[in-house]
Image (cartoon, rainbow, N blue to C red):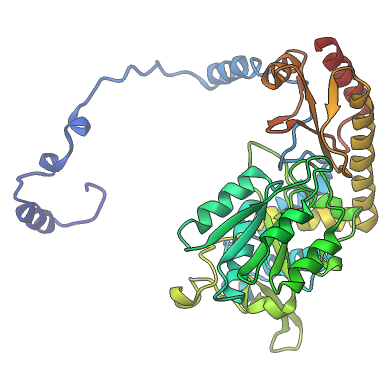
Length: 439
């Protein structure tokens, strides 16, 4: 209250209406207490720096990192950090005034173009919050396109956090949500389960490739054909789009929506964010895309120019007509992705994807030779694979950490191991040798 510029007369009037004599009278008892805080004595800058250094040396470093599960370590060229930190990009986050935001708008336009091209789709938006919410928005878009259908199918081999986010978005939508099983041998989507769940009331089917277990769907064309024949929409999620440098894009199989997480493109894992989702689809659905779209036009002088277009966010139109309540996009992260892709080019991205794939296969082969280790799925693996043992999973991961190895992520199927281009053969050998000794 003391920081709000009310006059004394206004304060007196409000207190009178509340039938109290002072502001303190309306405060909870807990807030009225004034405990003495034992602050340390002031320190000099040198002393503070020394203290921080003493804390920093307690951090453990030098671990071999095999963590993945939706957050991937890839090499980031130095140019990404240098260019994305330039002051020219330090503009207001929402480019409402195109005359003052051409740089930001162009970078987002380029991001859209690259993501649409990579996904094999016709159009993409200017980024989402992250991959999980992009999945939820894909389902909501399908429901808008196909009323009154109210049934949604979600693959059980989709990232658990993606599943949870979708359920959170959809729980009050009066929908029927069913999960499709995956084949226990290959790790791919079970086509029999898909056929059993598909019906005329199905608006959307959400699948993932590579899926949570790192398995690339081998029957994408058949899956897409089944869903299209049923007059439903097929949405494909991609957790690590570097795979698009090696495998055929989902758009080539006739899917309707491609979403995912672009963190792998120039954004560090950091402490779990921020990330940058992407959303690509067919041109016929452009009016139903959530979030922002940057369009290319010309200015009064006939020069190439960019501006927000076809925006259906709730800030731009009446809330009840908005396609989503996405209030922002990940401008800086999308910019870093744009610079990364521009730097790498098609050849560089293909080389990165090839390194990830070959190292994953190399690791799988070494793990399969360890007595007591079973490779969980036979499907084609990219970046990740699952192995299981008779020993307690948590105990293994804990023991590996003692040897300075982050051994992977525990799942309901076993330990999920990730190998990117940053994992060396020496690290892979050290992991397998350590695991063999533990078993």
